Image (tube, rainbow, N blue to C red; front, side, top):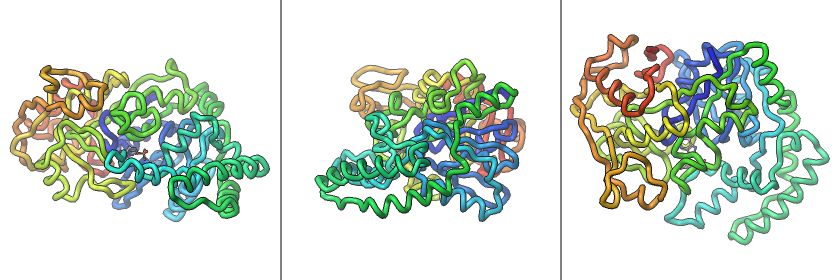
Length: 422
Ligand code: IMP
């Protein structure tokens, strides 16, 4: 398998965890390149459900090497609890997990600031996961962040942490929140540093050496295209580059070493948190929630649901350079008589076939729908293209064509086997 970048083509939660797990079979190394424990990748192995937040889903496949790249922001306490949780389930971690020295560390003041800023924003809140992601990336850009390499150096960590807590306590108090105890944070993070030490190394050198020796590398994206800090629905975005370019900057593997980009999309659309979602619709939301579907893997929040938005997905194909599409959750549409797809937006008296950058303009866009007949039978047991109902095949072909990419995978349920590879 060539070096593959996998991205979410919508607003996150596209079912990337499952597709990554399927593609991992043909990969030697799986790399996370951006985001932090705001992500939640759900994978079912047999009857067991695993939700991974920082560790690449590749960890659930025997013998695969997993890397947390420099572009990720790491909550050391969260990472340790994930490592221990997997160890308790009998997953071998030692010698298989490598964490970048230059990845930035999420500290308690990042989480506090995240929460306080959301309160301050009131009805304009972003609806963040409150994992401290924005403030951690903010510190990275402001050059006041601490990196894993600093966490590994006890003397330097102590000096830097003291300085950062002093400044952030002033900000927190000004916002009406309590300051943090340096002693407490220091003790907790020093202990975490020692436990994480065996995993921390120069992952750029490691990846290039593996590439030179012919390894196949899978770069797993977190969140989705419209949560990208540059290309998403700013300010209702996360703070990293969730699009394919982020895989390069977040790993140190250059663009000319990448061979293909796989975009993952749901057969419909969902979003958690605030911000525009043109195709949001009560009928499909109620139906999916009623089926017990579409609750966030990290926060448990009910996701907002809507019809498939071909305009947004086509735009995502363009920005990411998506070669192949994996369509997930097809079975979520099994009960419907008619299925709508948005093929354009009506916006300020014009018809648009692209996503407008102005957030107010985008929020006012009205979808122009076309309708497809449903199939009204369960697709959950289909294992080949031919076993899918004709109307489902027609729907899939049409959405892939509208999204301007080749359909390569269809997922009809959470289990590994519920996957059709074309
Ligand atoms: P943050 O990344 O916690 O700062 O949240 C910013 C926005 O991105 C919010 O709307 C979150 O709901 C959304 N978000 C962050 N991570 C994910 C994810 O893994 N899936 C879906 N939405 C996410």
